Length: 96
Image (cartoon, rainbow, N blue to C red):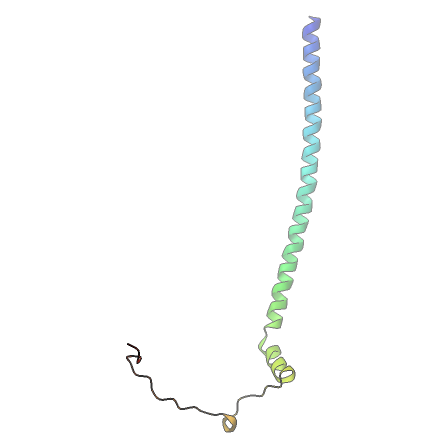
């Protein structure tokens, strides 16, 4: 009878240690999950900010202002436009 009690006590101790270990791991994983979710929210916020920045940088008014001020470009006017007349290309392409 003493031997059976000793085996049951050992199994109970192993079970208790296993329970404590699994709860500790569960808490660690829960903490890691919270960190990962916070990181995912930060990445989502950064992604939205980058999309807004891209939209701002691609605005037509901004591109036009940079072209006029930075590159000294001017709008097309008919009196400064040159038209080049090219001979028509034949339908066969000229290569055989």
